[in-house]
Amino acid sequence: MKKLRILRMVLHKTRADRLVLSFLAFLLVTAAVLWAVEPNIPTYRDALWYCYAVISTAGFGDLVAVTFVGRICSILVTIYAIFVVGIVTGVVVSYFQQSVQVQFEDSKMAFLDKLERLPELSKEELEEIAAKARKLR
Image 1: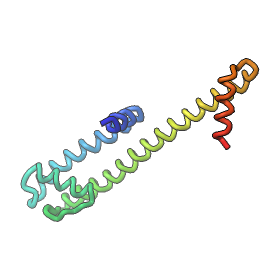
Image 2: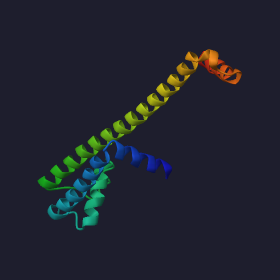
Image 3: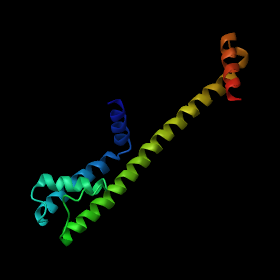
Image 4: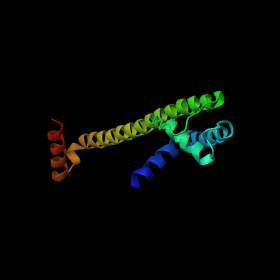
């Protein structure tokens, strides 16, 4: 549950949530089009199931697009899904990489600040710096 909240926060901060929402809207519209043009897809629910099968590349085979419009919709859903998964994955990885870099820079700046004030530091602070320096080896 916490991971889902973090993912939502990252998507919101990077505005990638708009991409995901637009994909979901596209998916709902495409399912409606498929339901309207495909004789093998009797309900809207089946059209959503078909979209899932196309997105997951599982291709269960229980529903298939036979019309030209249905096949074009299937191709568009597949391409859009690959695009969204790639973009969202890249955004999340980039966000966390930048977060780690910021933490590293903050830590480095605090360490350098202590080194600049070396004569003013207490014995405990000097021991802490020495321990950090040993860990870096």
